[in-house]
Image (cartoon, rainbow over all chains, first blue to last red; front, side):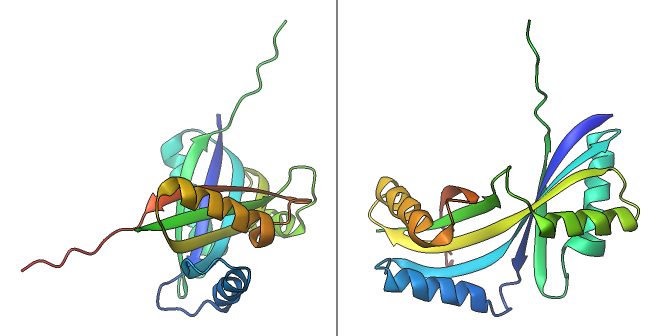
Length: 91
Length: 91
């Protein structure tokens, strides 16, 4: 078994309105950050999981995205899989 | 001027409770994903901006994080800066 971290990013599809992003953009402009042309806001989901191997884990995380983490009608989803850092106890 | 994309990730600090993450973890377990040991949920913010150079842009985005995008008492924030893809019209 390996311990893995999946970093899932869920963003609204480009054709979907993002009122939260528009609000943040307006707020940034009010604070003087006029150089900001667009803001899109999504979710960042970090999963710690165990798996036999990375290929299997990749399939399982894709299934989680499909079934729960994203709404595929209005959201895009992508993820990265990393090995979890292992604490080494010395001495 | 260069067009840049800043990808900002805001996560709850490790010591802060994350009820949304706990709920998603419970949901994944109910769906049969028992291998998930922990879930943390944060925000993903994508900014399109213009700047004279990358160094200046980095300073400005750090300032945006400080002033609006994250609550530094309970959240950690990090970001990547990329050049925006330029559409090349051929023919």
